[in-house]
Image (tube, rainbow, N blue to C red; front, side, top):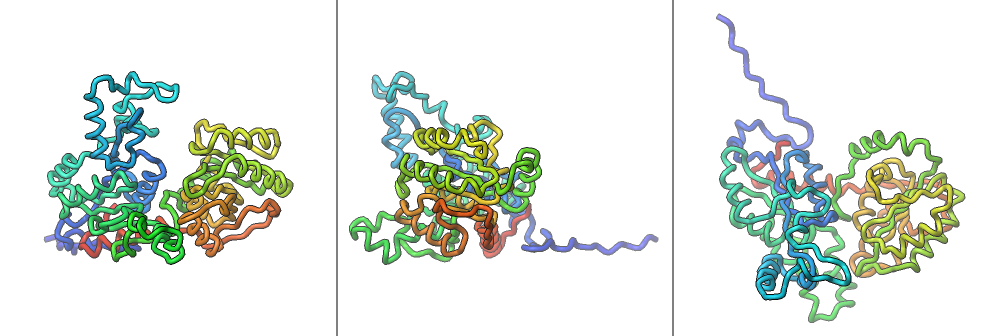
Length: 429
């Protein structure tokens, strides 16, 4: 009679080490899938997808998107909650003479909202409408077979949708809300927000704001136990992504003369205003330091004003050391992060600065003195941690310096693991 072999349970992996499922009460406490609630804005959705990637579930998520009516008078109602905006749009659509197919706004033909929904660079067939009833039904009907759902949402328009799903399927959903939801933080299992979102509660900020409007400023209360504070924005840049990008872009970037300086130009915001005046200053500074550069590669974003990009292209485009990306695919952004020796970035973009600071390479900031409010507080933190320096136009770009890379996304992923464990759940990629 053949002896019975002993059963060997698998060794737990390094890091967070959940026990085998037979000791966890079955699959009802193991999270293997993610629902992402997006709002169509890359800056918000990339934060959610970056966190999902850090959790090891990049290939096990479904993206749902909250959509608003667009075009014509709808642009005046973006401050309304999405549900109320849609009701108002329906009423206006029924009023005779109102049609987005006919209206022309400022000389351009408007696109019907039905064609604009789910746009943003992703095919319509790959994005699902974020419908509360359908997602709740799916969570209940698939729970026994597939287990609970980790839901990750980011952006103001996702708050009511995501919190309603959690309320109706609380035992089957764990909700992580990225970006501060202003109030009622008990509606979320975990909130991930940058530290500078709490700048309005500081004494310095309250001296700048009249008392009668303080309660309307994000946030309304100090961070509670379920709030994770980061320095910057979440993203998908990590050592593995940079290694892959270095290999993918090797043929294009390895022959370039060193040091390679990457210049990223964003666009003015409410708390960081500038125009051609900053572009002129930047052009002068770049011409002053170009002798110490091997190569300069410059990119603009969708928010960059045409007058800014046109001016910089005219002033620097003919210099043999300068290459200006024309906006056509493939986008060299990942290659730039991997191969750059240093970065020069306009102060308006928290996301671009967060990504660059995750490399540990020198980051110079242009226009930081023009920022105010919580964005100025963000720059103060980066500078105090030695991650950034102001771009003065007198630097020797061959000089290098470093710092511990910004690691917000990985640290936030660790906190998600901890919060799930407190609930008795484990995450299994």
